[in-house]
Length: 167
Image (cartoon, rainbow, N blue to C red; front, side, top):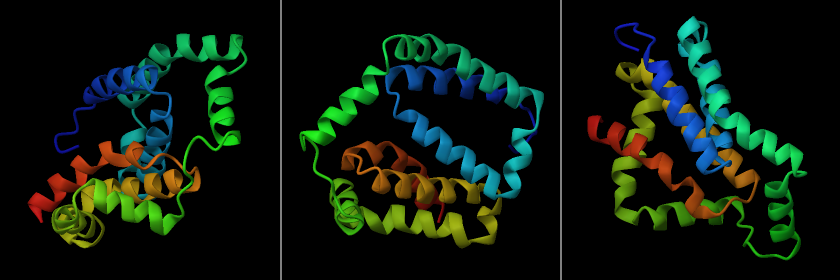
């Protein structure tokens, strides 16, 4: 972002494509990331040939699994529906989901990651990184709306810990 070199999109595409192959639910993170970029001036990063190449690489890497899912009548969705129908997973209310986030990250660390979220969303020095704060909030809302397992949200916290360190 700082030097305008868009080649990092290729690394992003490779990592995201492998991530989707590893865990299809990463798609929700990627959509949250896209929405956050679109909400901020950083949306300009999306309109480059490097961004298109990175997204193409992502799709190319994830395509075999997507085709397999389609050919086998979406077994992952069936697995999720069966788990929901059999009450395999606990559906947490939004306040309970937020509470488990605080517990999962250890309560005292909210002083770091909470400060990071506030810094990303409010501090003028973080203006070019504000999309990361929005990504966190959008992804949190999506996970709560889908009644995702509370630990699915954990991998997004390093972003806030880093921002908290800067704050």
